[in-house]
Structure formats: structure tokens, C-alpha cells
Amino acid sequence: MHGYVAGHIRGNLNSNYQICHRRESKYIFRPFSQLKTGLRKDVAKTSVIPFGSVAKTIKIEVPYLELRQVVQFNHVIGWASYRSENAQSTQQVAYERGFARPKIPLYLDISLLYVGLTCQTRGEQFRSRLVFPAKTFYNGCVKINSTQFSGDQLVSQLQIWAMELGFSQIGVTGVDLSTSEPGLIDWLDKGFHGDMAYMSRHGLKRARPAELVPGTVSVITVRMDYLSTPARSGWQNVEFDRLSKVNEGVISVYARGRDYHKVMRIRLQRLADMITQRIGPFGYRVFTDSAPVLEAELAVRSGQGWRGKHTLVLDRDSGSMFFLGEIFVDIALPTSEPVSEHCGICTACIGICPTQAILAPYKLDARRCISYLTIEHEGAIPVELRPLMGNRIYGCDDCQLICPWNKFARRSELPDFAERAGMTGVHLTTLFGWTEAEFLFNTQGSAIRRIGHVRWLRNVAIAIGNALRTQDDQLLVDALLQRMDHPNALVREHVTWALESRAERRGF
Image (tube, rainbow, N blue to C red):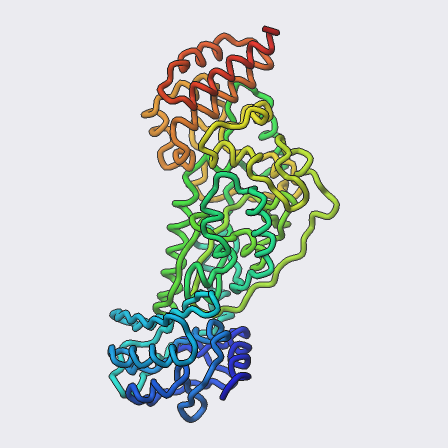
């Protein structure tokens, strides 16, 4: 069986029919209770790996260009590849078939045996993993786990579990994000990622889940609402009103409660544990804004919403006030249907951006974004952008506040995201007066802590300078003077700028 077999198998897999001891088989693959395999001489005869058909063991030769799509099975050849001499034989076969530097590492686990295959061909390296029951015996019969599950039923159950864990919705998508690669490359080439070097360092892995986590077949996406204020008509106006109180620092809504990374990661792990309890051990990895993952793209493809012109994900029933998370899994699941976009001709998010960071629909220059400047950027904030930041000291919500769909934003029921004391309505002099110890204490368990005390003072100094552009407040001036001799040059430079802003207003 040559050539067309690879396409046929891949087609079946893409229809979510996988050779797997936990899945019902379809088409040319049928449940079978025993798979006879020979010693290493049989392995050596096999171009890639023997598979089972309806009645007998067959050998399949798969062109190497198709290998990545095919070697994703949970039925393999028992212990025949366990001993080192068989690994060497398989390695020799790979070499003879044209692979460059083949490696066949073997890992023995209590319940599973993993056979990792890494090959490099035509300059491209990829890796697949084979997983099968370890409780078999060498050159004997592979006992097929009788546990089977329906992908549709599992996804339905995931929805129930997700609600119990505080998620508002789950979705499933595949791993082919190739159509997003040109846009990613162009965005990086233009330098729009600024100082976020990790985005370019990982290259196209961001758009290739199966390379980021070898063996990934499906991605489970989750959504979690975080709005802590009552979801009522006019909540956006309350937030806009904060921006007019120039003597108070404004922190982005999402950061006023507990650090979402911790909340999401714990609950995603619980969800993965629930899956394990239902179907048995499987390969997975959870993400929540913690690795080079195109989470917005994955969310859109899995039906969580559509991409707004501000590049955030929007949902008709929830707006955009939610966090995203993912579980990369090595089991094939039925995918969710994407939703259509509903922005129409609206460009409110583009027009309201204080620094005009949204250059065009769906095109964001992070280097101008206040969220990037106050959180991700480590150095001095460009002088020309400082007056545009107003009193925003951590993040910016303007493009979300103006969005008509966010009048439907849902209030989070999780106490983790309840607004902490001191996160709103606090005078800039109080925030600027925090010592490092006070900063660490007041931001304990908060996402704000990650920027550190120096960047916190940098951000607040800019807000004070902007306040002094509108009024002559001696309390603000005194607060700046107390930091003139700060040991960090970054703080001193922004304090000097803030004092000069006052002088400009007075005409000096």
C-alpha cells in the first residue's frame, strides 16, 4: 500500500476517526483485540510502522512528506520497538528511507509506553509521538484497552464541566493555522511587537500547535468572564468617568482582582484531570497567556467569537470582557463551528484609541498601545506618547469601553475577580508614595506585581505629569520632588519630565 494510503488515512483522521484504544474506529480501521507482531526483522521490513486492518496485520509505506499527518496513532506494535536493538533497526529503516538524522527515543512509563520519532527532511524538522498500552509482552499480543468514547459526547460533557469550573464557554479546533502565518510574519517584520522578543524568538511555532507541543491533534479553548462590576447598562460610562478624574490612577478592569494566570491555569488543569478520569491518560498541556500561542486565532476558529477591529475576540452575548485559555491535546475531537463577524462598518475602537495604536482594522502596533507601554515595555516610554496616556497607570480599556457589544458583557461570578480595595479611586500621590515593600504587599496575587516597583513609579509619574498639565496641585509636585533622588535612573527621568510638564503649563 503506497502513496494514496497516506491521503486516505489522513482524510480519516481529519474526520476525527483515529486508531486509538480509546476511540471508536471507522472506515478501514476496526476494533481488534489482538495485533500479532514479529521481532525486529519484521520491524526492519516495515517502511514506517505496521498497522491493523479488519482481519490482519498490514504493512504501509507512507511517503515521508505525509508522515507528520499519519503518525498520530494509539495502536502500535507492542513491545517490538521497546528493546534497543529494535530501536536501532527502526532507525536504520528511517535512514534508508531518506530521513536525515533519525532518532527513536524510548520512554517507559508506568501505564504508557511512548515512542518518539523525530525526523528532519528538506530542512524541516518535526516530531510525532506514538502512545500505546504498556501492559503487553514482547513479541506477543497487544491488549487493546476496551475503553471507548464518543468525541461528540466528550465535548458535550466538557461544556458541563466548564460551567462547573467557572468557564463561560468551551470550543474545539484543529491545529492547522497556516492561513494565519503570513499575517504573523508581516506583523513581526514590521516590528509591531516592540520589546516582546519572545514573539519573534519562537517564530512560526505560534501558528503551529503541533510543533509547539508535539503530538497535538486538537486544541480545546475556554473563555472566562472577568467583569467584576454589575453587568448593567452604563457600566462603560462609569469607567470612562474615571478617566476624567485626573488626580486618580486608573488600572485596567481585568487587573483589579486576582492574577488571571493563576485562576485560569488551576481551573484548566482541573478540566484536564476530569478528562483523564473519563477517558484515561492522554497527552496535553494547558496555556493561559503563558507561551507563544495564537490564542485569539484559536478562539475564533473554535467558535468563541469573531476578531474585532481592535484585534480582540468579540462575542454577541458577552462582548470582549473575558480571558482565553487553551488545552493542547493529543486526541482528535470534533471541532466547533466558527461564528460570523458582526462589527459591520463600526470603527469606534479605532477612533477612540488615545495613541492611535490601531493603525487599521485588525492591525495593531503594540509599540503605541498603552497596555503594552505600561506593562510589557521595560524602558523609558516615548516622550511623544506620554501626554496621550492620561491617568492610565496599568493597561487601557478604551477600545473595549467604546465597543457597542460590551453593553452585553457578563459579570463574573468568581470571587477571584472581585475588585480589590485600593484598585480604583486612589489618589496619585498615594500610589506614587508606595515603597517597594508596600507595592509588593498591595499587589500580592495580582497581575500588577509582574511589572515591578520601578515601572510602577514610572507609570504613575507620567500620570502625575499629565495631571499637572491641567492644574497646579502642590501635593502632586511635592510627591514628585520626593522621588527626584530615586536610585533608579528610569524613575528620575520620568519624574523630571513630569515636573517639566508643570513648567510648560505655567509658561516657564
